[in-house]
Image (tube, rainbow, N blue to C red; front, side, top):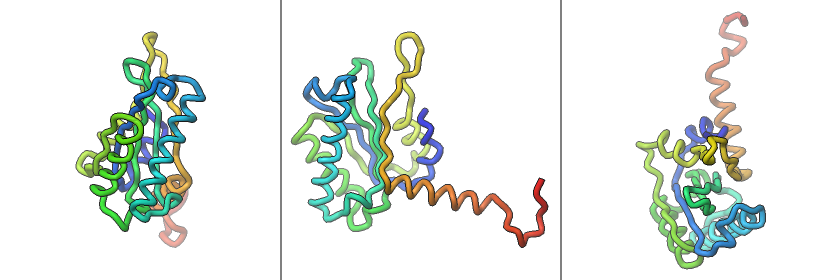
Length: 172
């Protein structure tokens, strides 16, 4: 599982998705294929933001390439509610779905189901192994807005668990 999984469970998500590519050049395991996948993904996110009047830099995004049984690269992603207040998760998901399907291939993009928070994050962050049982490294992307959100959540959690100097508690 991704090292980010614990922190991603603390985020309020708007949308989750899986996106594939029709062409083999973008589903390969090379660094060039990864760069093409990332460019396509962020081009669709940019078009979505333009259409919905969202600010791209305010969206908190986690994305990860996974390979699957056929060793064809595809993208798992989560988009936080942070930065999407002017639209609904349903509209955001439908817009990404429409744009992706028209340009690149199959996608499944849906509003995030908060009743399945832990399971959904675990699915997005799962680890794959090769035939020999060796973990396959997955390119992950955590944008600046999500990094800030994770840092803020960690600081809040820390301030809730560490006693303040005025409580009279003694350190160990």
